Amino acid sequence: MKRNRFESWLQNIYHTQEEEISCTECFDLVSSFVDLELSGENPAAKMPQVVQHLQQCAACREEYETLHDLRRFEDEGGALSLKDLQDLIP
Amino acid sequence: MPATRTNQEWYHDLTAGGESQEAAIADLRNILLRAALYFFSRNLSDFWGLSRDEILQQAEDCAQDALIAVMNHLSDFRGDSKFSTWAYKFAINIALMAARRERWKGVSIDELSDPEEDAFSEWVMRDKPDSISPEQSAMQEELRSVIRNVIDHDLTDKQRQVLRLMVFNEVPMDEVVRHMGTNRNSVYKLLHDARLKIKSGLQSRGFEVGETLALFGAAG
Image (spheres, rainbow over the protein chains, first blue to last red):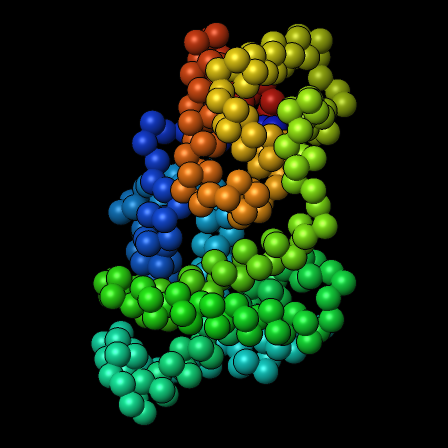
């Protein structure tokens, strides 16, 4: 069953820690987090504070997901040219 | 396609001066534009009503802003990721802010901030399940009452305002940041402190994590 927004928020409340990293700290760490993840390592074990922040912060999570997908796409040989990307804009 | 340089080569070329630097800056701008376009292509609904040329121009503007940000932060690059991954995040960050600004440009955030509006109840009722037992319903009502009590009596005005905007009205963080004239870290801290107070209020009334989430059918 799809979790509704109130349930998701309740989860966020219960998963709140006394100390959480800031958006700036997450931004500093997210590029090495993504590269570790794409190299097959387990960044969550090394940087649990990033995982915790990404669960709580929708803006940082969206940036992480975009960065992850873009880099993974390139790693898989799917890098698009500028023209290809411009053509995705209708 | 991304220019193929090692991290050291990127750093060297971007700080070298002369033709090497010019070429590296042109390549960097290209990869930043790719990241902005990639983000925009995933979020086209944010640009509803804009022409293709206007969207492409916004991507160019984001790439330019990201280029300035990357050059300003070049000394912060520690080499613990690929340079391109590190640079991409600046473009994605700026593209996300531009996209959300475009989506919310006609919306009055002042109205959504109105403390007289019962945003919490409206938000909760939007997703209320149709069929639950009377016992579940009573427990859920009690839980909502505890949360409302904490919001009304224990939060600061700013914590309440951020909660109302970001959670109950789903305003993106960067729009709240712009509205309040602050930064992401401050808004995140307000939201974090509000969450901590609500968590503490729930636990002090006996709502432990497992049973509370089970009450709503969510796994812990």
